Length: 281
Image (tube, rainbow, N blue to C red; front, side, top):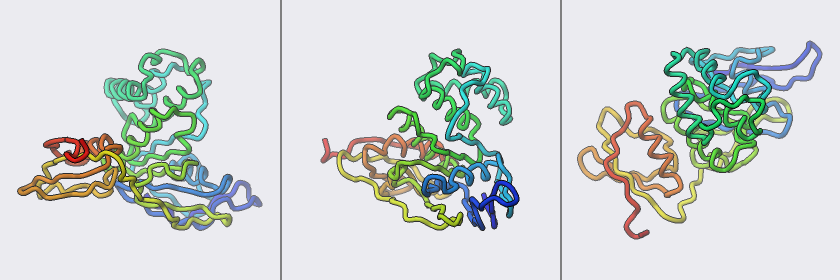
């Protein structure tokens, strides 16, 4: 995805919210967009999604985009399952595929029992889970998350963390905004900050992974024609075992996300063994 000389203002005489933004994000990248409140982060994501048009410059997307807004309108006249089905169909899924994917994400977020509940009767947190699910069901090439973690419980936040990393690991392009500076630390590929002048500049991003506590070892078969994906969750340490087998050592907190990243990579890598490191038992 590329933004070239992009500027945005509302009205001919309005102030420039974004100005001369240059951004290129490739497949498999997971990128944070930071900045002060009101700096234009949400505007940048809406431009990237195609929801708004730039005042200057151009936006080129490599395919379909899915977007989670900062605020989800719960007054839509659907229940959760019907809404997700409609969104899936808009994204080009068959009815059967849309139902299957919707069910999987409702279950993953722990709200499968509320699939038939009207959106207007769902709690704010549950509505937010539906808002996130609608962006995930079709596996769009570009995923844009605007404060999507706000209102989610800790378990759902972890699910979304993993989902964002999985989308990137599968070759998607992911941009996100979040108020927590530690969000997806160690998993991002880059970070940018919107400045007070509306420009976008590289920002320092913490990529440190907490390596304290228990450690997991995951052995995988890595044939020559399917190398390890870059920027795997938890920044695992690889150790060749002979032949095409490789042991990946990773903090236990990242092991589930790493396994998903390996399994959704293209082509998927075969996991040979998963064990807790001997000295940690």
